[in-house]
Amino acid sequence: MIGERKLPGSILVAGNASIDDVTNRVGSRRQPGGAAVYAAVAARIFNDEVKIATAIGGDYEYKGLLKGIFPSSSIFEVKANSTRFEIEYDGGWNANYKAVSFGAARLLRADQVVKSARGCSHVHLAPMSPSKVATIVKKLRREQPDTVISVNTWEGYMHSRGSREL
Image (cartoon, one colour):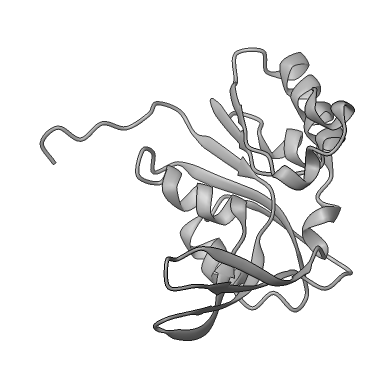
């Protein structure tokens, strides 16, 4: 493709994969979701070597899909129900989270992320607890000092000053 530009190296996106029940003006459907999944799909625009690190429950119905799109990923199945969101979009496409269940994704451990990142030139951390993110960043800096790290957060983690600092 003329003018195609890809980032060098590989990218790991770590965070939640969820099962989303989505309703909008077109209808309702169940689909894979989660900040890590969305970020990993977007990263594929820039690089074909994208991996995801996430924790899912045995009820996660999109495991095969994720492994197909991101074959060298670290998808950890844990003994918990999968993370789920029920999202309703209004006529202006504003999201209203009707129900949230932080299940398996919260069980993704910092050491699993760091191990999954070995050999990756870029690591993106989708929203996770600030203390977990801080641990991951410190360990990555120690083990892979040249890795480019990007962090996304969620306003729910920003309530106290300590939660806003790494």
